[in-house]
Length: 152
Image 1 (tube, rainbow, N blue to C red):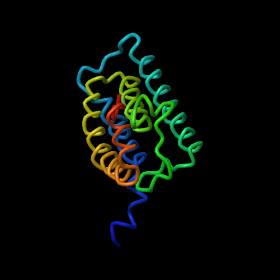
Image 2: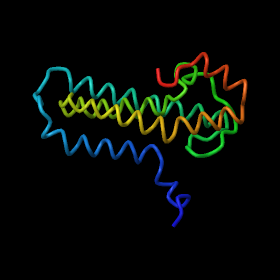
Image 3: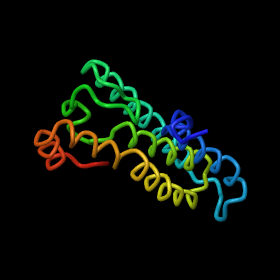
């Protein structure tokens, strides 16, 4: 079976689920895990903001008649709305969900999991997507990239 057959598995929600599973299993054993007033509520807020970012970004992409699915060619370059604030609001939302679940588990030491998550998402998804967008939209993508940050 070639790597093309497994591309459907190589999607950001799989990486998100993997990181959330690590939090789930590691949190009860995390050092410095103690109840902290407000931290769990902050986690809930992070998860809610993350989910909202994802939803708004997906709706924005659908309205622009382009795909939110990685590894696919974009039909249009979306630069307005939430995409004027971050080039990758869905991935930013994913990272906020990871952070929020860590905080909900009251195991802030596990926030270190954001580092490999951001690295994997950047390497496996963002960099190839940016290369496709640059090839397809050229100067328009270059201008967008110069005025809008990759994450925040």
